[in-house]
Image (cartoon, rainbow, N blue to C red; front, side):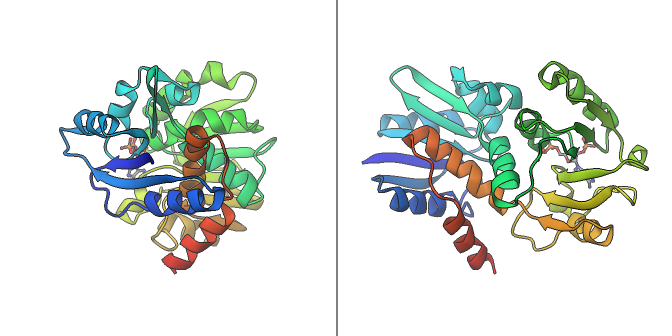
Length: 275
Ligand code: ATR
């Protein structure tokens, strides 16, 4: 039987085994999907062991996405741009690395939340790995403009400079939070780690255009301080990152199995379990 896994540390909390089991059942694919705990200094060894044991591919989660990038001899353009890999595929030519996180975000926005990005003003908060991973897919979705804002402005500026060529004609700019005052956006995405600390990025009021959507990549924590503030500030639609989690899994499944699973029933079930 074809074997897949998610490798991380910690990994016991991962919902990926449940999601991929549901995808497999739904599409009639015969496979197993396990959660593998790798020692902090043993990621490459864990991958090698899994491959030897017949593994066909794996997802990679915290803290190994950079190591997975280094391990992949070939990478997709979106993995190359993200500088990180969340999906490995093992084939006759060796290890292929992809990054499905940003595509999962864009698909959640455009397909599940009915929030088109083309022609809209998008604000991306953060300049770490999560923001970087989202940049190329967001730019590819054709926004009217993309603004990067970060607590440490220089990191946002560096990221904007790095993606200037990929942006083409799309205006891509960088800012601190306070300097956003007076600007308006249709979609505001929180890719900072602030929610992990139960904090909200200190945004000026008035950023949300009529009908705007606020999206937090975090999930499973109820309304984060970012979402609470966004609602108070006039965002009409609020979303957490659970849909992104399911959609990135679907993108990985598609890469491995050549078939795109239906995400809606899986997302609904996870939502029900989270209460
Ligand atoms: P990740 O891989 O999750 O993106 P990271 O690379 O450590 O993690 O990046 C964390 C991001 O969250 C950064 O943009 C960070 O801002 P700085 O670059 O200024 O450090 C941001 N961040 C973390 N805590 C924050 C907070 N309390 N308020 C606002 N931004 C925060």
